Image (tube, rainbow, N blue to C red; front, side, top):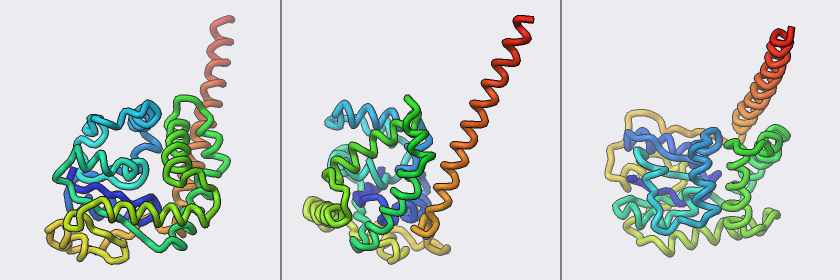
Length: 240
């Protein structure tokens, strides 16, 4: 692990994920790794709900990755600093008003959508595990149970301040993705790539993720219906 990102989700983590993959030439670990990956979702679920983060073998999750970003990784940046002592820390920030606006779009279009709520009720799926992780690590711990914008922004600012206080100045980059390549490359001691900085997952593009989850929902329904029809057909054939 070369880089540990301690910033919350909706602070440009998708863009930074891709930028770090270009720079480090290794994959970066993000919340999206959990959503459709039951194996990883189960690892995180067991870690979080069994409270075994102390002395945890983080290579079980991060082996082969050059960086980690977003929830729930950012919640454990202190433990990760101990496990990967040579890693550098990046704190992604943005102003609290634009952050809460972006977060609310995520919640309303994805997490509160009928599709996600339906899929997250199916036991033992990555969606169900992800919902449990979201409720505990984000709503209860990061947001301290607050449901209103004002208090969530307060907790957002408190978190950023606490990270800056905890990490020594020479080992941390406080960064906004709108700054592009230069501060990032200077911090990591790497040359600036000969390509534009990858600005991804803007708030206005959140609909793409929503459509993807809706597609997954339709796909599961079609497969389920096909299985039922197949079962009935072969059952009739068997008893003829």
